[in-house]
Image (cartoon, rainbow, N blue to C red):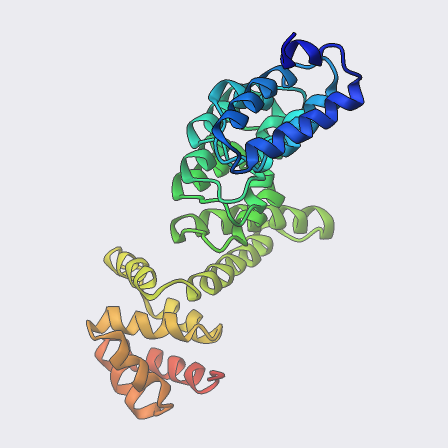
Length: 313
């Protein structure tokens, strides 16, 4: 009688211990013959009638760098108690398989994948595209996941009214500038409705407050972006005739010095580094000459200079 056949006659606790040992062998640099025998046993143990046995095997196999696809599939599609720990941290699953799990399995499996460290862009998009709300929520909290613009857009499309989820996306370090305005608008809009309902604020006044919040939040987020992204955004705004004195005034009033300086750079066609030095000099006359060159009226330049003097350098 071989080892596989003998397993059927062993008590459950003993089979669970064997499962742990098999998992350790497969996770180590054992001899090829031992690896082959252990793999044969692992396939049988993965089908064991006792959940405890399958769970013991699953936990040990998380450390394996390579496992045959059939074994990976068997464990991953088992009940939650067995599959969840494996799906969350197994190193033997590839992106193609993870996408398959997300697109074909239930909510608990999707949530397990969403918690993995270092989720690729493709897997992250699959979660954003079709996964349940719980999985998308966990994805938004997973700072190690690679979320691209298309994933952000898909989440906003699918859950436009979920303010909590929008707020989680807004705090991510990889948030693209292209999506910031959409998130700020959705979150602020929700708060605007709250003001109207809870405090009986007029709709016009609530809209004004929401608009103000949109600008301030967007400016703070944009201020932290890399300079090339800031320049790209402001250049597009200028091309649409939207980079006016009101924008520069907002930046000064909110102490967004990088945005103010880059705005001047775009308006005047001068290098940012050169203007950065001039703006930081606190020389009001120098700034007055720069602002005059933009074509703003004297009264507008005067208002901008007053805000400049109040800046906290």
